Image (cartoon, rainbow, N blue to C red; front, side, top):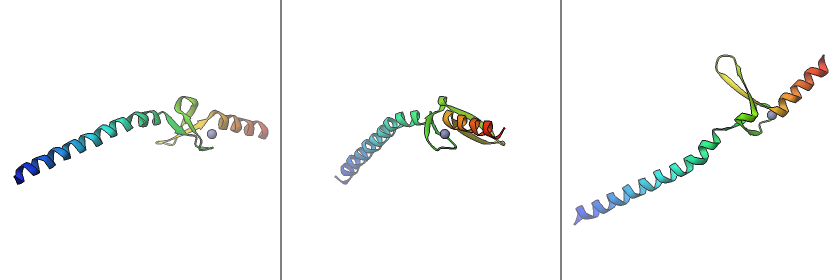
Length: 81
Ligand SMILES: [Zn+2]
């Protein structure tokens, strides 16, 4: 009798784990879309990666800049010259 109860609990546990795994996979969908979104290093707004300019700083640091900030930097450069 105790073995049957354990077996049922085991099955419930497996069902629960499968459900969590399933939900994780469903949540994995939008998370993959999140991978295409990065923060601009200057204004901290989120943009799609293809709208951002990627620059490597030093050996490892990758910084993203949005078009608006790049234009602002360009304008600042123009004012100085
Ligand atoms: Zn920006």
